[in-house]
Image (cartoon, rainbow, N blue to C red):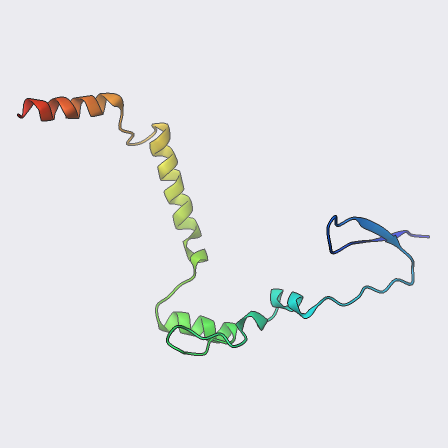
Length: 110
């Protein structure tokens, strides 16, 4: 006979053994937001246009030349790489010598 376990939905999220006649209770309606358009219910853009479905949201964004933050994931990743290169001295780091030379140059112009 197989043993069956289910995980509790509240902390500490332990696994408990259940019998073969166990029937999982249906989750609340809030879980449907993960795979449905429920999060769009009643949603309107700042100009009042209804965007109460994914399709309407996508069309509105395209029509107004807008985008979402996830479109910049690659851009931000590349920028972080450039910042890391700068900080570690690989490219373009300003050294103490550079600062001292700049100060000396400015002082000599007086």
